Image 1: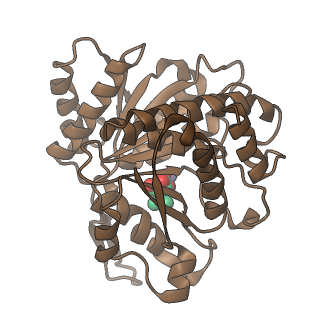
Image 2 (image 1 turned 180 degrees about the vertical axis):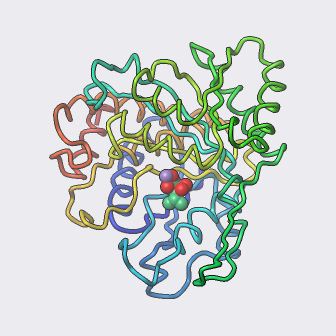
Length: 361
Ligand code: IPM
Ligand code: MN
């Protein structure tokens, strides 16, 4: 398996290094063969060279089976990075150009991890968000006129294509079908977004007819936020458009123990371009280079990379490695009990060793 590695900025390179050490330890045991190639794309690289990520880079990345990304982004108030130049230029360009149309974000309370929700356990917080990843408000359509005058007008257009919505919904139904509860909730805001919501709701209802074994439900996104906090056990799989998905998955990360453990995959499920895996957290420049960052989210994202890419590319050895990494993470998280996960009290490299030990060294 050919892996492209984008360490990125801040804590990104540290947590990715630790994750790759975990893979190095587990791969030979499963006769899994891989090669990894580093790429410099990051805010730091842009500031140094003026180069962000161009079409030739995308063509190069297409030659890989999957991409592991740490985090990209510089200091929050750097005027040279204003307007989301790095977010749009790297992260969103990769997601769009490689047609990674699913953003898969598990919300799972791992053993020993504390949730801020009173009386909720791993039994209650165990669902996965399927966030559409190539449309909606993220298309960047819109404009601004009469800027800086009292008559200023700006608009930003929400895009929902039947094709894009339906392929996302289908993926979510297929996923729900494989799970114990087989329950899928559509989250939208059809009472106000009556055009976009209509496209989503009809596609959802029509595809549902092909999946008699999957139970379905619908929640408005505001109610979803309330349920995620008050009664997260109602959810098994959620399918949600891009922008609402961005918001509710941060809430999801918070109820499952914080950004220190939230993993994600940007999937091209058809395998025509590489998928990309990344922790949900950012580059955390304030703690970079101090061996403080918790690499669990990245290690877990690597596990997801191996399982998902293994499935897409029919590579059973990769799947085995991914499953072992996922299981080892659940053996390590109880050791974080009572500690702030984002700064767990263990060193970044120490946590990597704990995962390797949990896999049997
Ligand atoms: C995420 C991030 C990105 C998003 C930003 C950095 C563009 O918040 O991965 O959730 O909005 O998708
Ligand atoms: Mn986000």
